[in-house]
Image (cartoon, rainbow, N blue to C red):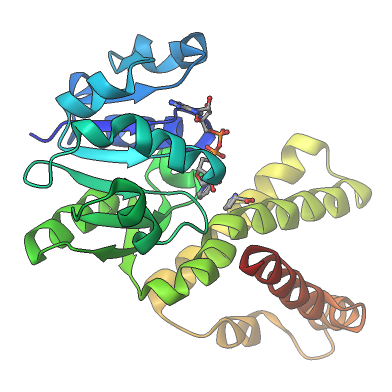
Length: 263
Ligand SMILES: NC(=O)C1=CN([C@@H]2O[C@H](COP(=O)(O)OP(=O)(O)OC[C@H]3O[C@@H](n4cnc5c(N)ncnc54)[C@H](O)[C@@H]3O)[C@@H](O)[C@H]2O)C=CC1
Ligand SMILES: O=C(O)[C@@H]1CCC=N1
């Protein structure tokens, strides 16, 4: 079994560690997570996951290294571990937003298999969509990393030019869906539900809608047609939302995020 080092056990790094552990395909002892404030990793330590501050030790122990620090810290952490990196042993995976595989190769100073992966926080419960691209990786290594992220949801291989778009749609996208659920709850409370019941209804409705599309493979509008009774309350609500810019505001938000990331 491969050992995985996750350098940067923050929001995403911790979620990846939990997802890997819950997948039961990786033993806790084969997962290393590092960060400076290791007391914040107590929940992982309790599961038996190895936690510490020593990035060099984690890299020496691992075959797959996941870099999960903020983008502006990637250069420093690579400088810290580069003497431990071995192209014959290691695969480097960066989840940092906006740092290209070429930039990472330059930081490392020599060629080794490099992947960029863009998951979202649902990776913690193995329900992420993770977009992946790579450089200097062979077919076996590509399969290996796809399989790893498929344990944590669905992995899709894309061209590197689309990684920023993938960040917006999948990684930022989960926040847009949370805001949608919150708005559903607020509306639900105003028409009579308590907050807990409103959230259960909103969450299961979103889950059911997503599952219908994922499993049925249909266009959303086809499913909407099944719900909208002529002269009924669904179409009346939907049209009011559209008059107020529902789809337009979502699309504009996505474009705004994309412009921000492209800067
Ligand atoms: N949060 C999200 O939903 C997503 C984040 N990303 C990317 O993942 C990366 C991490 O994001 P977050 O987890 O949100 O940030 P975060 O700030 O929660 O986590 C980063 C962690 O790295 C630790 N760290 C900093 N320097 C370190 C070092 N030298 N050695 C070990 N640990 C160190 C920090 O203490 C922190 O715990 C970023 O590059 C971000 O762009 C990508 C997809 C989704
Ligand atoms: O908001 C951000 O910058 C990061 C990128 C993807 C999710 N969070």
